[in-house]
Length: 221
Image 1 (tube, rainbow, N blue to C red):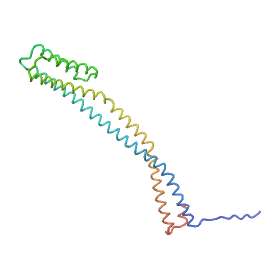
Image 2 (image 1 turned 90 degrees about the vertical axis):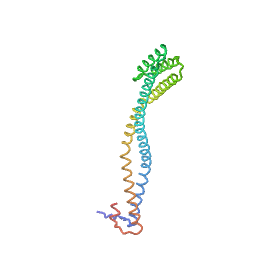
Image 3 (image 1 turned 180 degrees about the vertical axis):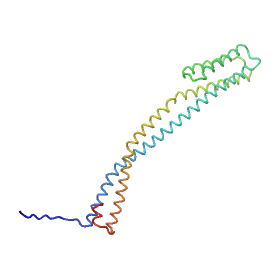
């Protein structure tokens, strides 16, 4: 058999360390680019999810406030109508209008369609304008009743505009959370790998500057 000589070159200790340092730098560069992209996405999704959650709470709180405000305003209008009818010298026609307005308020106090409520409020305003008693105290009560009814309708308009938006924000919150669940594991893995490679880089750069390590340590890193 013919003998074949094979030359096996071995790297010196400093060359091995240089290779390890280059490896750590390569992985840091590779992982950092992807991490930065995901980090921005995680931050953005997290902020949007938190905003959606806060919006759900804000809408629900506002709905409660508006419902209570609407109820109180119509209740106050009823009480003021009672004060108005208590005047001894209220003409019969005015008294008839007062009772008709009271019945109208009773109809719209429960939840009804906004369109119907607008129509009834217009009827109430028209009937209030037809109250003929010109005594100052009477007209002040008429004005106060009109103000309460109009403000109640304003609350109803806002109620109608935001009703259901809490569900929209809630759906958005869960959608964003699902997106977060898809990217967070990879984001966390990249963060750990970058930290590990940075720690390894510091160690081997220190070794290259004079600390004593064995060749085996360099090979195993």
